[in-house]
Amino acid sequence: MSSHGPAIPMTARRGGPLRGSAEVPGDKSISHRALIFGALAVGETRIEGLLEGQDVLDTAAAMRAFGAEVTRHGPGHWSVHGVGVGGFAEPEAVIDCGNSGTGVRLIMGAMATTPITATFTGDASLNSRPMGRVTDPLALFGARAFGRSGGRLPMTVIGAADPVPVRYTLPVASAQVKSAVLLAGLNAPGQTVVIEPEPTRDHTERMLRGFGAEVAVEDTSEGRVITLTGQPELRPQAVAVPRDPSSAAFPACAALMVPGSDVRIPGVSQNPTRNGLYLTLRDMGADIAFENPHEEGGEPVADLRLRHGGALRGIEVPPDRAASMIDEYPVLAALAGSAEGTTVMRGIGELRVKESDRIDAMARGLEACGVRVEETRDSLTVHGCGGDGVPGGATVESRLDHRIAMSFLCLGLVARDPVTVDDAGPIATSFPVFEALMRDLGADIRRDG
Ligand code: S3P
Image (cartoon, rainbow, N blue to C red; front, top):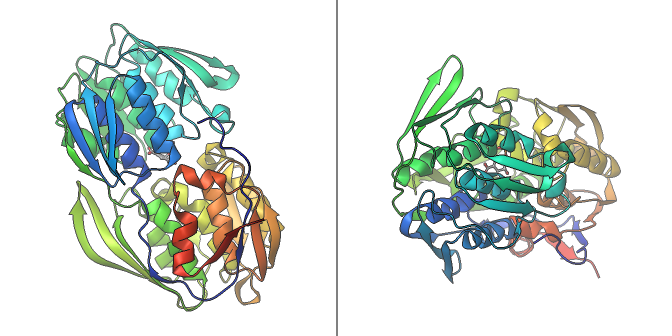
């Protein structure tokens, strides 16, 4: 999907407390991977709880284009008949990954060591994002890529006919790059090694093991060293996708901002490479309980309970937590706008190359809502309005970025005057039921017109 039709302006207004249970959708990272690993296994993988957001639907379509049989049986219930490692067919048409950086980067990795050619494109947001971070390591395997200036999509990748294994140290903390290299390593002989100086989300490693690949992980002075033994036969799996902690962040932060709120969010992944926001919220004084901890599909999960207990305190977010909450900074910045005191977020330069430049998008939107901010190349400081309340009364640009749209709609629930986002359409990429779910909790969020 390279565009999503007419803009959908949406407005959030201050109202009563948020109460009830919020069943947020399945984890986006795990959903992409379940489809891709299913396509690389021999036989039928069954998936429960798949996120049916546009990003994941685009990956499902891509897996069909590479020859896998992908079937929807009911809400969140899908199956994938895979073609095996090295079994991808050459797609007949251009692969459109829509808005999804994860989709395109992982799929490029998955096809890069098979002798086929594929051309990738996306929407205006995706086509402006850097792909060199993936095509550089894929070239070491013998793959070639031809894109637009700056290593941007549309781009054609020619997979290596005689791939060689690779040892690669990640220059940026990126699970997408790590995963692309590991996926490429699947069809290379010998051992492919990825070294990550800072740990990033580890769903690929967990899932590779679940599908029967040999993956060794060692923490060393260089960082985390991940060694994959190539050319395994992946065995199909039953995958239960836990609920997405990055989507849960929106009702969670809204509950912590709106007085009188008490919200439960069941079955949310608490993978330690993803839970930095929840540690940070606790450091800010939030009342969060993690109930019923258990394991689901190889991932730790818990039921979250969030109760509003007064204004939160601004803090310095530890920069070494950045990778474990990289997608949560926009909503944290919104919450920081309503907190007491100053919140400083450092070491977040990666936010400049997400679906939008999220440092700039949050800074401009918060200023428009009457919040004082300062930014550098890789930091954002938000001076909370505390007891005076966030003025609001602005229309903010969502910039084809689902998380910017949802962050400002959450802020609108506590601002003195309504907050409008110019286009809430992108929310469908990751959280298609956001509007209904928030309204069920009692939030006043409505489409305009
Ligand atoms: C993702 C990794 C992160 C994250 C993205 C999903 C993944 O990106 O921002 O939403 O599923 O691997 P980077 O790894 O590029 O930081």
